[in-house]
Image (cartoon, rainbow, N blue to C red; front, side):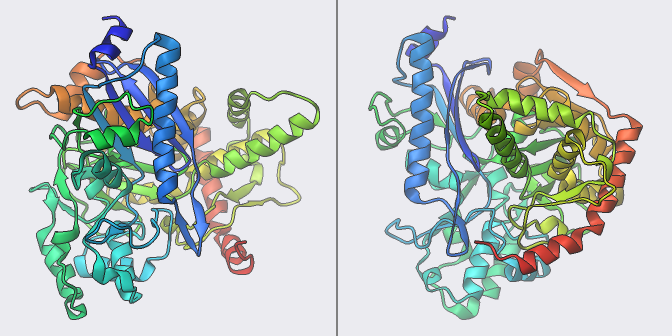
Length: 532
């Protein structure tokens, strides 16, 4: 069918994901093909020691990305969007958005990037016998309680960023099970919050005299394929400031970037896994059974259908690469060169493949913020070399690309070598894999396993949530998400699989030895260099 007709008939699907530095919107047809897209850049702020985005930031970014999508539709098809079949919203998981009974935000949004909940995370992990990382929503709530924060008594509802946007679009206070699993542990048999752990939490805070119980203030939980509400007229106006968009579209359960990453890489079946690499990086492996032991480096979350997933989440990935690319761009501009940033990224990523397997003795840290997987509550980006290190551009860029994966490898070694979690297929997606063969080869070096990247890898989570919205709109009776993806989306999807050479695997292992030896240097930098 003609794409313009698909748009004008209202049979297209829209997916939107709020990432750390960019909000993306995509429009797909009934086969999952991207037919239009738009994006809007934004950035979190460190205010009073808290990484946050303001309510205006959130509204402007959503409207900005949608406006760019409209521009793309107008430019390529000469039409406007008046209605769509379904919509899905995704965002960075975890964090803390708390509201009172009047729907007023009680404290500024605390994002996943904050590492200020160590005491709460430790106590909850012990109480639940289940790993609760610092970025989880329940850790933020409990830390606020431990801190004696005045606002806690007034909480009527708290949620994630995706849950907040979905609420404003539909009026429904719900989450997809994958995003919910980053708020509070999920029982994979019931696809709902673990009741025993909820009772444990309520007992922990029973002496506070709050009027609420935990179950009263958590969002409802839905699974992939469920109807999570309808786009209201008010929601349509919030999304589209031009006023053309009509309400009435089906809205699928809002998901976190972990769940959309699984959908965007067809890794929702047991024994499949993926690595999502952008501003942050995380790996996920779908498990047949839960882990034997509790590991503070490993989260247990779920697929969008509720299956248990072992997740290694690292706060830092490409920010330091982006910073150095910006420096190289400035140098080129001094010479009067007009820089194509996409081309520059291609060149410096490919240059990394020419470096020595162990980066020639260079070592560094990409810690813009804390990195709990390696035991850091705060971070300072560092580059370290000795006088005899082989300091050249290929080794320097290889080091930067290794750094983007190093903390992940630290956690993955526990999962693959200690827990022996089986994985048959590992997929890569996100900006780190955009340059063909580069990030893919280095990830394979890190995990000593083949890595597959699909041609859609760069589309990322916005496409993933669009697929989940499509599934909710067309799901057949008894059809699973994995079957839908296998048979209707990925059957003819082009992809490439690479396996690193042994010398590169050995080189990454050698780099990791230097990396771990340098933890003391990073710690000293955190202790001695104050964040301005």
